Length: 246
Image (tube, rainbow, N blue to C red; front, side):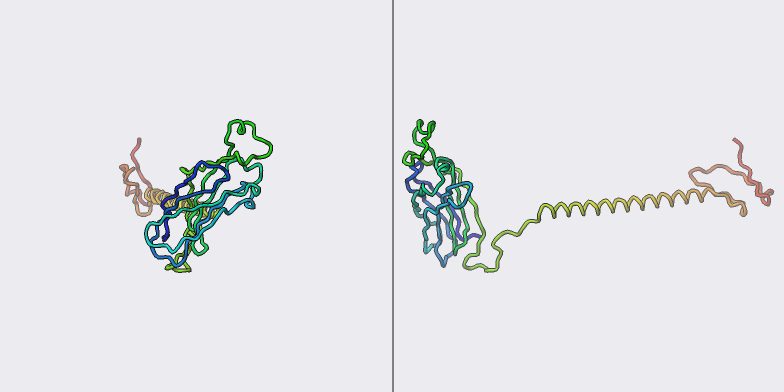
């Protein structure tokens, strides 16, 4: 269970110029006393192709943290335009607000940011060189993406698992399913063989019941197909049997 829970983030200056600082009102709840401070950090993603253009705009330590609801104002400078590829200055990017405890990140909030020119003329006919003074940003504050991570806090076992257990790979799951199907097929085949053997035994019994024992002068017939049969005992030695004529 997380000792610190993020309950709200308010983006204060939005929309704003590209060069204006970022301002956030952050609210969180602390359930137990903490020995160390919380570190909050804001990162600007300069390029979708490489992490080399990411810029850490600012980071602050917040503490000591009392139990209950806490709120503070976080300000960070705008990114340096010269560290961003010119082709990605006027485009959509992402900013990431994260918090860590003992160098372990436990929450991350991402926002899309739309950078565009402030006039219709510049939007329709962008200059060859980006005019950064005419670029404005708009943070999509209504659609944040929040990611939480499990970490070990002060009063928890340091050997506890920090992440959920790994799930089995799809290939392993498929192999298990195939093995189960093969076992089911083998069981069905065994059951069919047993049924066939039982049917053969029943047929043999029926045939045996219809045989004639000439030595003892007896005729055995199945009960279901029983017919009236006359036995000439006087001809027993010759083994003659008289049956009704059709």
